[in-house]
Length: 97
Image (cartoon, rainbow, N blue to C red; front, side, top):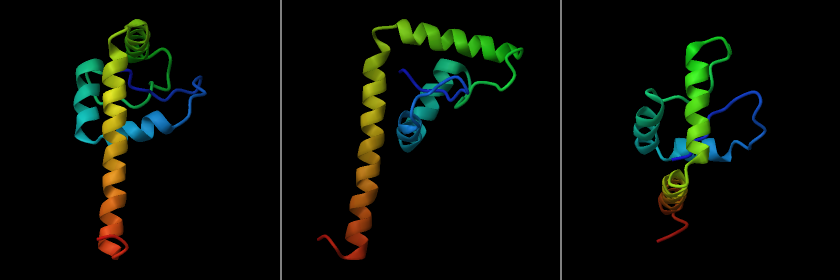
């Protein structure tokens, strides 16, 4: 899984992070297995030992050809969760049967 981690140097959009959060427990378990904790941001202090460890994990995951499948799966799951919430909202408001 190529999970996005927010960093000051990153100019990526917030979409991947938003979709990962929408995936709920799945992404927490995946981040726990990859980073050892549910990490959503790099430590603010570059001298922190966790900063280098997390940066190395990010580089290894970016080079992996297998992690893109897990990323696509989790992003799709997050989008489906959001669509389900919108559908439930429409049904509750009486706009859809």
